[in-house]
Image 1 (cartoon, rainbow, N blue to C red):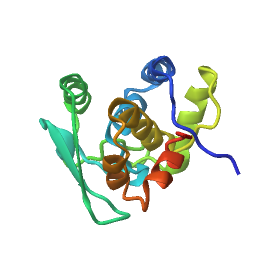
Image 2: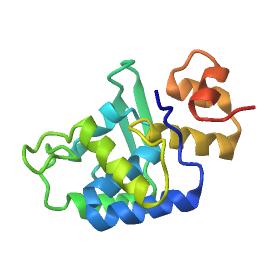
Image 3: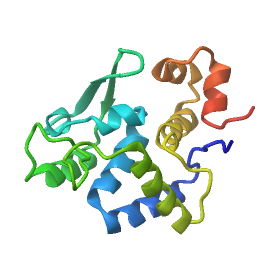
Image 4: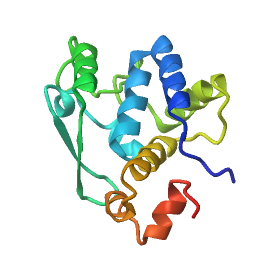
Length: 168
């Protein structure tokens, strides 16, 4: 079984963002919020316009744990969200399928991410890549594995470090 990795290099993150933005603002925004929130994909996909519109912080009740997870939106991300949602109903899903209006499916996200990753020369990418990338970069900035362990609701710091691909 393939182990999914975080995207470690900022340059690769930016390259993937460019690829995604060219094909779909929805896909770019999904990726960008994903790597900046640390949310599980299931929680990310069920965000609605009203959850993020005109907000500095977003709070989500995690499906897996039932806990409230809160994250900040940068002013730049808020501006992109505002532009993206301007013609959407506030009860619409943020990342809808063009066919159904329901959230896009995990398998679709997997394909979108993998296609973009291949274009920039990355492998080992999956639906957990967004969350792992968030964790990896959070850890690099803060070196605070305890806070990250709590954010990810994991049993031990060693589990968190392994999850984000940091080997001591």
